[in-house]
Image (cartoon, rainbow, N blue to C red; front, side):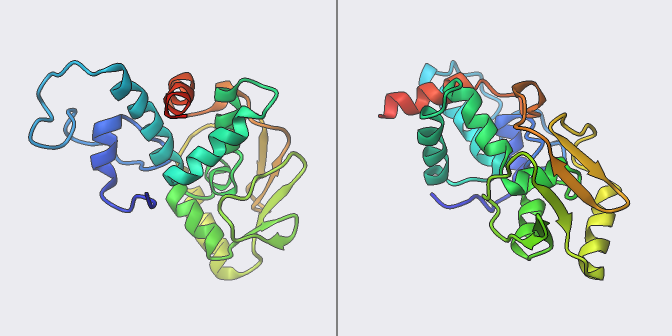
Length: 202
């Protein structure tokens, strides 16, 4: 399944707040569709599926990409759920978003893919690039790039900078100091249900 490009509020109405996907909040509190207001008892599978969909839509990854991350997380020394969140959080597009350079992850992905972002002085246009401790993330030294990021910094997507990052607004320079801690993940998610979802699928 390809990356979702449809209406974002439709997704947040169904899954709840997704800080990486959209800054807007839906006027209606119930899910979209003809039966959105009907009360239905959800199965265990439906609950696990919903948690998995939260991850997919918040971080903007395809089903195939998410499955690849789950397999990689299983090989980690920390718990699979924590490792999965860390892999997604340390993506370059998400790191640019968490530094405040973009209001959402899709707009951060656009900054990266259009070549506005440098990692250790080199242009990286792959949104899924895994940021490592010690790496420095800067804006390309072009007027268009700097103006774009400066405008975004006026209205950052999230108010607080995570403890694993530092950012110099005058230089437009961010630094990755460590791997993110679970407590700094902004998305409200039960990652164990996501791991269960994939373990049952094999």
